[in-house]
Image (cartoon, rainbow, N blue to C red; front, side, top):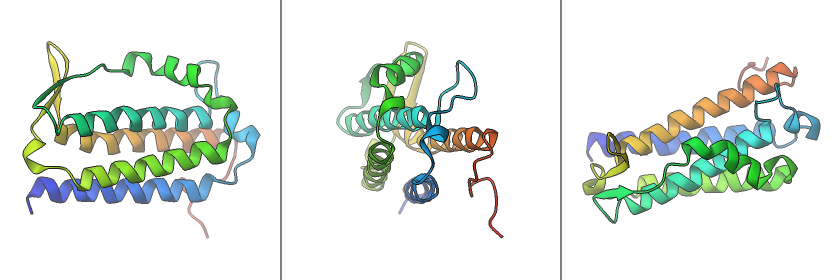
Length: 171
């Protein structure tokens, strides 16, 4: 097995472990802690998880399409992600359903990462004339993005003094 495939298998395993751990810790959080926004322009926990669902959805398209073509011109939703969250009204959705969708979408992404055709890892998503990312870069960066927002959730909960074993060891 190549070093890149080994790395992607580790990324996939870490995605599943981190998401499963978060779901186990957060499934019984009270509604007020899920909808609390630390500031006027900050997302609630529900909205952060909603954004991560959007991220999984957009990356799923990239991961699959980049195994079909060598260069992919596909819209970047990054400048619009605030609008995506608002339009889908994650704040009003049932927590159990959001958490389940997020969990299973990430399990599916991990499977897609583990199954990647190694010959496609150099295929490029073209963002604009000056910017492109290989499939390998997208797959490894997905974990970085996920971890960034897991920490954001932990900080949001910490700001409310809600116990989260991600930031506080048991004992």
